[in-house]
Image 1 (cartoon, rainbow, N blue to C red):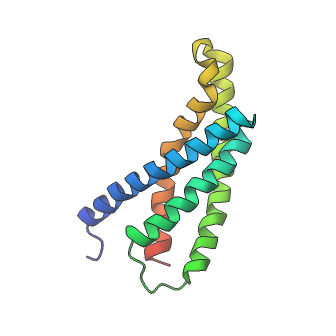
Image 2 (spheres, rainbow, N blue to C red):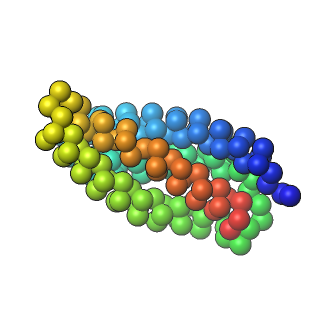
Length: 141
């Protein structure tokens, strides 16, 4: 069996830490755009997520996942990943905007943190999706 469960778990843990660094980068850019430049949730999330996703893709495809011969050249895999990210980020940004609105309008003591809470809530879902897609692109295509 080429990818044992132990190997997948090891790669998952490595990807989690790499994604954690990507999340820190993402969150710093997000915070800068929200606080310094007055962006809304969707715009800030879109820009910051692309930044973090690019970082995670490059690190994970060079350090975590085996880059087999595959059918696609590396540049094409990156292009596919960015297109996938555009779709995922659009969905996550809209979801984040809805979460922000719900928190802001219904949980008074958290209203001033609603934009940040929205980001925290959507991140685990996007990390799981990114692991699956990045692994597939790096090792299967």
